[in-house]
Length: 131
Figure (cartoon, rainbow, N blue to C red):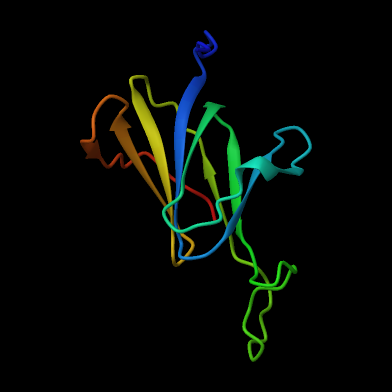
């Protein structure tokens, strides 16, 4: 097995798709602001869980995927055809805690902090996400 990097900013995160739809996951480059599609990590099914190695300050964006695979997501009758997105930031939460990010049906992101070796969870009020 591979050991995690010995870096004080290294964090384990878990992303859970509870949106009811298909999602794409992007990492946001801190220098350019460009979105980098993590194609291998598409969250295509409800409740799918993705474990990632990340770093404090990393910003991720999830975007809903249309049923047709095109860039429009609204219903045919809707004036707004844009796909919903949500961003979240990896916080400086000390190990052995892991940050779990739940992508909800209203496209908000709930952040929960859990002990990595336990199923017990606690909500951390310091987790703030941008939309």
